[in-house]
Image (cartoon, rainbow, N blue to C red):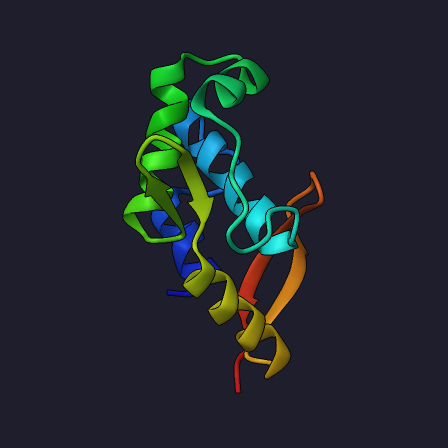
Length: 116
């Protein structure tokens, strides 16, 4: 699954649901390289504090990405960036089938498939 496909499954920029904001921000961090393959993502309590939402809401955003295998859960330790997803993203960017482009007025970064 590409990052663009993941973004479509998670929601669109500006979606008012708080868990979508959490998931999209994490996805942006992963696709931009802020979170590296195998690196831990912030805990649900940290995310809840950062976004001003309940830990349950933050956990929903994390679970959505885990359900898409973008991040994976290690019992007792937390969630980590999936190495397989990150490697697939890196390969797609290197071979030119994926490019990062600005989207929206806020200057958010989105990943889109290049048309051939």
